[in-house]
Length: 112
Length: 112
Image (tube, chains in turn orange, purple):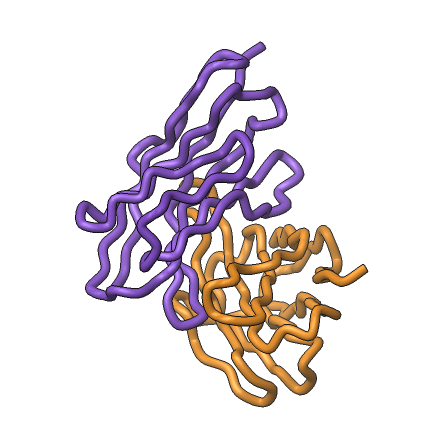
């Protein structure tokens, strides 16, 4: 079955460490997105990519980095520069404008 | 910049009742898409309903329907015959050029 796989489901990071969240899709979607969800804040866009080897910053890109070397994969790195990384991270993909997103099941990142 | 506002942070209704969730948005665009997403306790984001701005007819999906008022920039969601499984966070969303902006959500409790 086609879908988006995010891993791991739960991730713990020590302060000062970088950590990478995985997002893989087999839907043949061109566009992929990373959102951060905090209580009472809704979903905020971190980065998005509409084509391989190209990506754009969203509203809260500081302290994050991404790559898009393959159509299927859009990993997100949370760097030590991110001041408050504890959050729920959602990856999504889209085939065309207006179709809406298909979401992964999310990764809960906790800084310890 | 587009914004999406959900004025009801939390609502509770009895099972089998009808409930309406409010959403307003701000944009200078004429053609765009609107969505309602549901996020149950599992945190999986599920597309509930989709509306194309150039269509005057309100979208419906089984027990879910919208009241789309383009001039007023209003996009409310009506859930008829509410069920316990409708308990979730509901996000209103605006899409233009492959990027979705989400509201902060309404937490809906269906009471037995």
